[in-house]
Length: 200
Image (tube, rainbow, N blue to C red; front, side, top):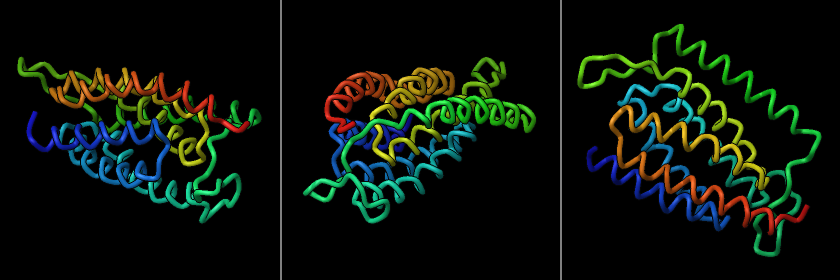
């Protein structure tokens, strides 16, 4: 654990509070956090999640445009922010299928490329391809749902956080593991809050 990881974890704390509140500072913080964790993940050998951080960076730009109503101009309040809404029911089977397919493909790809491995101090090598692949798939879908401001996006993160906690503990990124434990609490609170504020 170094100062870079501590800074990233601190940014992440402000990030999750901002996401919980659904305020306009969320996406700029998402840009910053994505940049920090891309470095942390790639240097820790968590390659799929490192690539996902790059994806999150791009999706954060898209999210700013959607939330501000610059693109997809609908359900925008007087303050210029998109309303929280519910994911249309017809998309659910597609979302579940996408998560399953992405998990399988990413897990296979990481295993085939022999990536997402970590050498413990004892010299034992552990393979993180399943954890890395599934958490990456959930993150891909979760960010897309978040960009549309669907309250059910919190379900993706509820599943991601325990996987990431495990990965960070195994790779010695303890500040990040603690941060993601805090994230899990905010996921539960966020789902409750966003559901109450949903317009549909």
